[in-house]
Image (tube, rainbow, N blue to C red; front, side, top):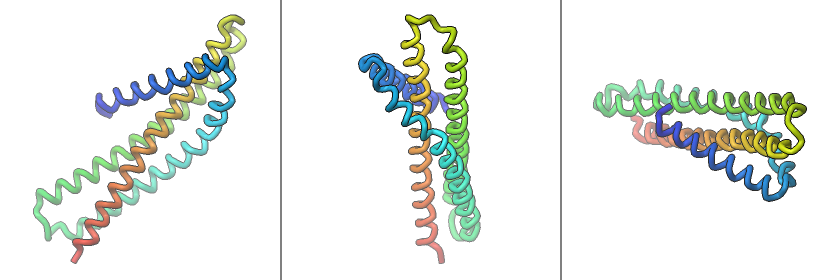
Length: 170
């Protein structure tokens, strides 16, 4: 992950956290069931996206293998550019899949930790603590949705590569 991608992730966590905690504060917590319901889908979405990552990786791997057929028909530099682009795409897919699983684990850890710490928080600060925890969990969910959108964009790129290959096949 590059510094630019890390900065985007931190910015996304910060923005979504700020929006969520603001909405919870303004609504005096009445918006929390909405966020909890959205978070209840996190397990399913993360599982689906992790599985989809494996499928996309295999799809791109098959494209790379198919390119071996035209290796002699194109310039070496052009062939290397395409192979490098596909390798980069495979790397990105694996990183995004890992990120989504990591965010799910973090979200569940924070939820468990909050349940443990719940009884130790003073009465006056309990609402703010709950808003903080829920906002952090929701920001992790939003980052995973963002990673999924990048994943799908990569898949569309792979499909375009495949189409170009099939059109130029002899």
